[in-house]
Image 1 (cartoon, chains in turn green, brown):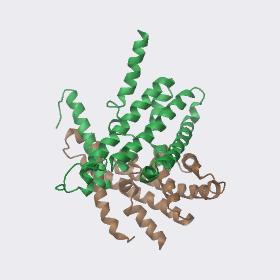
Image 2 (tube, chains in turn blue, yellow):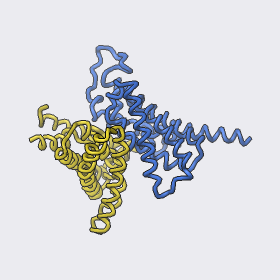
Image 3 (spheres, chains in turn blue, cyan):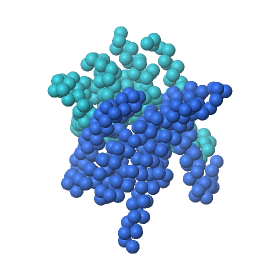
Image 4 (cartoon, rainbow over the protein chains, first blue to last red):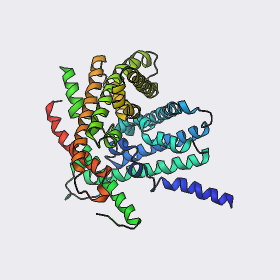
Length: 210
Length: 192
């Protein structure tokens, strides 16, 4: 019975990142990469996976050392741990996928200051054992990757008429250049937040929609 | 002449907030009142100028010299965090009035990705020391400009009838999109 309860709560830690606390839309954390690298699906997914990698290891390390770090220096310690992991991720990307690393440019190092990582360290990993922290990291990381992929597909479809470089809309389609530009990123992101607000307020009874 | 180009480019044409999406958190979070926005902008400009002045020597004379440039992210983030802490301590001692105005914003600046972004761009573009400081200052001015304009628009929006799902962050981001479009008009200022 206890075992069963344990599984349920692990599943809950995983699942909350996918909808209830989906990072960029609900928590409004990690907005910079959400806006900056989502001009195509490929870049968005690569960024999401890089963040997932760093989050996975930072949650494990921070929850493993949570009792040895004194509270006064914890933020500095977390930042150094995260910065080292980001360095690893950056060097890996540059060595194995040089094209993607080039496309993402300085946004890979900027994972260091992505609020999702410090946010999860503060809100979850420093209070929980290693196993739940792993599930938390996987859920939030996948939710983040999904969000970036969604943003990327909308912008790539409207901006180039393709998804993953695969032409979907025919020649009749006039690409919306604005979707590739920064302005399009802001508008798609704002629109998606409104859509998610709308869906969840419908779920909760649906009064006061307009 | 190059310094003027760097200044115009970093503050208007390649505005950090509106073209590189750096510093969105304070841009959305602290832009509800003009006064707060101005204070945040000033504090950020100050820290950015200092960051450029401090991280450039660290990169050039320590990391490059000892052949460990891959440590730049760790070194920069520690330098920025220490710098913000020092500035906070100094302001608290020297000018309590200024501390009351800027105090709560200073810790937030450490996690402002525009500050780290600034240090990274500075290295990527091979600026020399003077150029880096101008670049840091201009980036701060650009940030202040963007957050100040946004806060002005948002104060007016308080009286507007916005559909419920769009209220709050959503409408702020859509407005930022329109501002980004407007800022594209500056692109013709400098050739090349």
